Image (cartoon, rainbow, N blue to C red; front, top):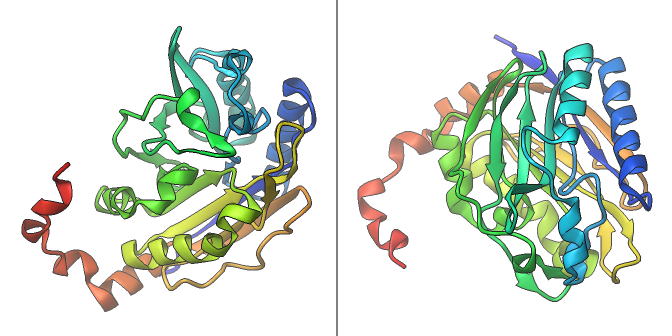
Length: 280
């Protein structure tokens, strides 16, 4: 039996300041809701530039408390008013000097459901993230929302198959992967890894990437945001590689049972044989 939800992703270029960036995303929520979307995920560190192109402690000021900071509260009100589930990838301050790359999850009634903290933190040219973030300590939570069971895996995490599988084992039906990824570094992986993860773990994936070149460096963020199903088929078109775009698609979650009954990857796992994989 069909079980269709309408889901949305939003890719955007940096506007130049935090407040106008938040306003752009508030309008995206309204536009998504007007198109009937029931859940919407933003890009990594959505209200700022991708400041990890440089190492500058001034950007620590972008961090906020989650859920008690102003941005989460602001979007809780909007979620409640419009009846939409929101995933907010943000810079989190747990306490001074303890900072994470985090996504807050808000249910359609405005309830804060919890957070995922990015587990794998890169430290390469143009992506100096260890300067800004501690490795996440949240595990891989799956959130029971008004649209179903959703998980979050942030940007660089996607290169590591273990978290995808943990989310699948925990019952995720859709996994959102908010990102800030650059054309020269990862373009060849973008339309390979997430479809492969969707197939291997038999869930839908929403892959979101920002667009544009920001004044902090030469990273060329190439958008091409998309949804992919558990048969590695894109749901509708892939988004622009240059422009802001709201992607709204219908996802039939009944397909998960169809694919899992066909392949039985979860039945045929051999966890007892995997012990060496967890060795340091």
